[in-house]
Length: 216
Image 1 (cartoon, rainbow, N blue to C red):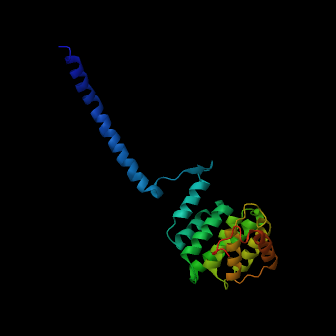
Image 2 (tube, one colour):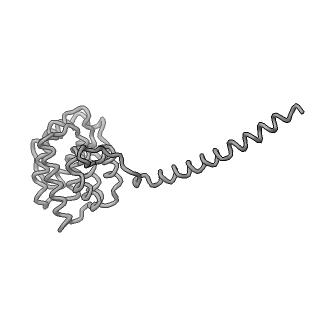
Image 3 (cartoon, helix red, strand yellow):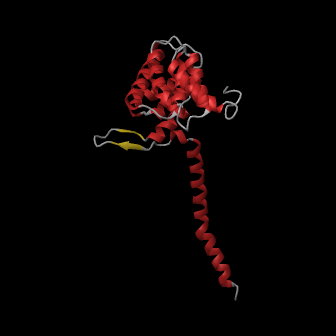
């Protein structure tokens, strides 16, 4: 008789917790499915009083990173370009350079690239940029995506050069940033003697110390 209460309690526990365990397994399966489709999940948005909405800056940067083609990247800029700051544009150009590496963009895509170059130039001229990594990403991506013959490249590289002249002297400017800037301007045939002098001055103390073979 002394064991009967224990048996009843275990049976009751099974009755109570079995559905709960099943529900937890189902919830776990749903979470796994949502994780695998993370880019399709509803986007966190910031809403205006008039009903318009736009993605939060971190989400917009994530969309740029996950874009699967140059066309998708340019579409993102067409839709959300007015919300993009220098960080977004650096990421965008970096990804564009990978997708359009040494290709000739013409027609609608060429026009979109020219528009992006003009928008990036305006952003840098209006707000500046003190982060050498962002400036290096923009320059490197633009050199690959646009090449030396793009008419819109001159103004963009002029704006990058003005911002990078000061950024090169910042403590956060690493050898890879200096190397990417030098490579981009040389590859795009954009002569900027003042910037090259700044890059040389910032690089000299790091040679043999921080530069690796590829960066040299």
